Every structure is written in C-alpha cells, then in structure tokens.
Length: 92
Image 1 (spheres, rainbow, N blue to C red):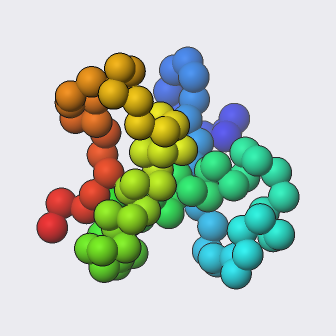
Image 2: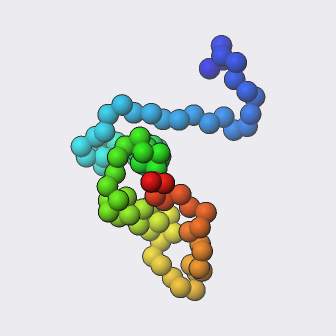
C-alpha cells in the first residue's frame, strides 16, 4: 500500500474478497470479524446480482439481516419506515 498512490483519507477502506465459499461458516471462519466481513461480501454480491439468489431466498436472507441488525420487532421502537434506508433486496 505504501508504494501505491493512495489517497490520504481517514479512514482507509479495504475490502475482504474471498474466492471460496466455506461449507460451514461457523467451523471454517473462526473469528467474528471474518464472519461479519464474509456476510457483508455475500450480501453485496447478492444485491448486485453477482451471485444469483432466488427471490424467495433473498427475502428470507433479508429478514435474517434485519433481525440481526435491529432485533425482534417492537412496535414502540420500530416505527413505520425504519427500513426505508436499508438495502435489502436486489433491484431486479
């Protein structure tokens, strides 16, 4: 990185890119941060249609992502439109 022309921005952003998909993420990806980065990479690949995901599966995965980020639905906390800024499904 030091020998490249890199913009002096704070913070620098790096992308983790893996070329394989583990059969068992919990067993093969040991560190929590590695699992999170793997999840974000697969999510981005699905949202950009780099990886095809059937609509029914995409909706199910989106529901898991929402529950992981926001927890169980609570009508007093989760007001109408709280997901409007979230990218959850491919644009097809």
